[in-house]
Structures are given as structure tokens and as C-alpha cells.
Length: 83
Image (cartoon, rainbow, N blue to C red; front, side, top):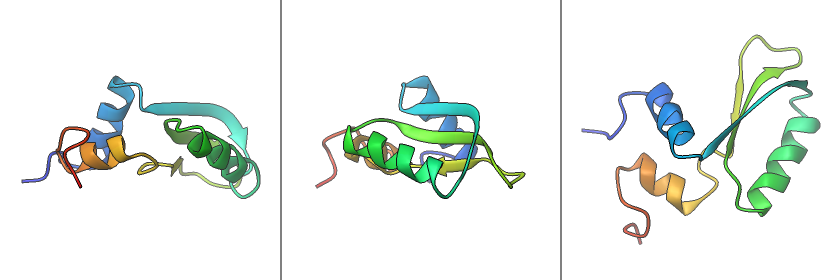
């Protein structure tokens, strides 16, 4: 059985452990969001949930698997236990 029932449950867990940052400002999904995400992943930062990408009615989730800790969490393992 997977450790999370759905993506929403995984997002909630990431938020609980400080591994998700919500961006509430409207951003351009091509230029601004991608630049922000690239800078954050280079610094080992959290996953990003852009709540208001311009031109879209849907939020944009980036860097979800941008660290080994988040990958391990997604598979239900403790950090450091996946080779």
C-alpha cells in the first residue's frame, strides 16, 4: 500500500514538515515560476505550490521531487534509506 492515498495527502505532509512553500502572488508560469523554482532547487529548498499562475485556473506544483528527502518520503521511507 502506498504511503499516501493521493497527491493532496502528500502535499499536506510536505507542508507539515516544512518541505512545501505556497506562493500566493500571481506569477507567470513560464518565466517567473520556472526561474524561482530553479533558484530554490539550487539552494536545496522546498517544493513550491504556485496558487495563482497567470492564465490558468489550476495551481502549479514544482520541485516536488527536488530533494532525496522528498523522494524518500514519497516512497514511505526514512530519509537516507533509499540507495
